[in-house]
Amino acid sequence: MPDLVRAPGTRIVRRGIERGPVREFLVFSLASELYGVELARIREILSPPPVTPVPRSPPEVVGVCSVRGLLVTVVDLRRKLRVEERPLGRRARILLALAQSGETIGLLVDEVKQVMRLGDGEIEPSANALGGDLSEHVLGIGRPQGMFLILLDLSAIVSS
Image (cartoon, rainbow, N blue to C red; front, side, top):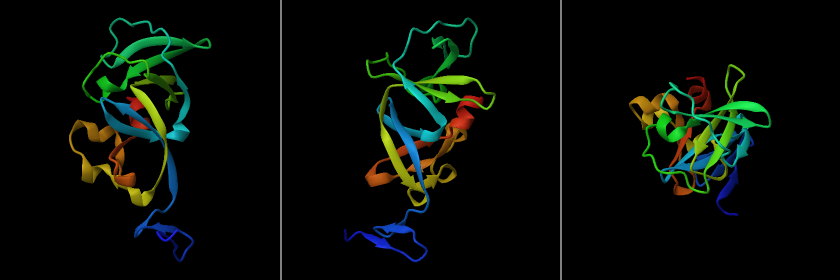
């Protein structure tokens, strides 16, 4: 493995980039763009159960559903992040995450792709990469293996 070198301080250096501590992200797609959230914050991945609309709820709230007797508010991440809306496909999933209030929130996504490990050296802070309203929900930009991955701050998404 000629591209891996053990650097002083026991950190791994790959192709001249110091990876640093590694974090795991669950990668999913929304409108053909790749997004990621920290895997430790996701409790479960579900096929979408029947969702009951809630009158006078915010536009990003699709409704509520029951997951083993627990009432879960379902948020459409397309609407929350102002991404192009499309009908749900058969690969759509709901990611169950825990909000700061202790409430379980369901995040509706187009498709779950994979789990990806990224070192701090592979994550660009969002202040340098994005501007506007989206930046409050973005943790940073991941650039693993030539990909462009928008890393979301799950705390900001489920708390608002």
